[in-house]
Image (cartoon, rainbow, N blue to C red; front, side, top):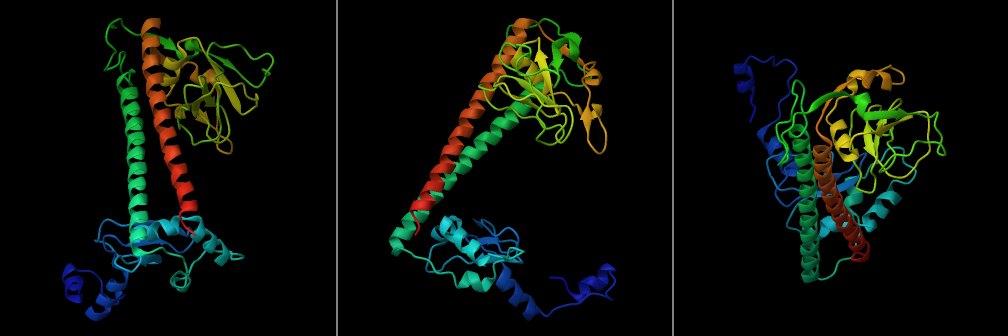
Length: 338
């Protein structure tokens, strides 16, 4: 505990420091100290998002705290607070308010239906198991993201390198230096959907929705490459398969190298140095087309492309499982609470 003696010995200025008594400290700490198994959720701004805490070394303020050990098990109560029943209550209580807020009185007065104690225990256990399964699936997805990031760093030459640190078995030929413009042709909004060049595997597209430099891959059914040329998200690379509207903020890369290899390689390159403009950031193909890149033989390109395609397919499958689990939980929350 911090005392006036501690502060004085530390050399801190005590002029503007107000101290409270031990009794007041214990009273405040008792009200706000969080224990394992307690529920906390937001009361101001973002209301809800309840969680059960698994540690007891902190206190809270301006957050609702429901202590563990009441008549209603917190495992059951947590899911009730996540259900459409409680969300409807929040919407009604905040109707017409400019700032979202749910007072402690409203939380204490909230009325809800409960089954008998044994059923509440079973419902809480059911959702806890489902939540653990969802959490495990999220960890799998994150592990795949990290795995891909590691492979991108190891299987393509980094700055100052001419060959990658890791190569697939059976390949030893040196990589050749090329310009990015040698491996990717370019098309712009001057092309229309009817005269856009045909590309094996799809149509590369610059997509302007995300943050600068962000890279995203969709799935094996989206086999073309994208990078934004101006506006929000300039420099972001994506991959798609369906012909889309040709608009001015987008540019189109047409790979002459293996499509999957090219898409993976582009994700290792930093385009931020080619971004100019302040009001509307933009990037010109004539500038980054001179960027150096090292390219292996066509056979190694195809092997690397297949490797990353398989990795992406695995990610898509695991993401589909997570989406299914999330939808399943949403359905159960709607049907198991009244």
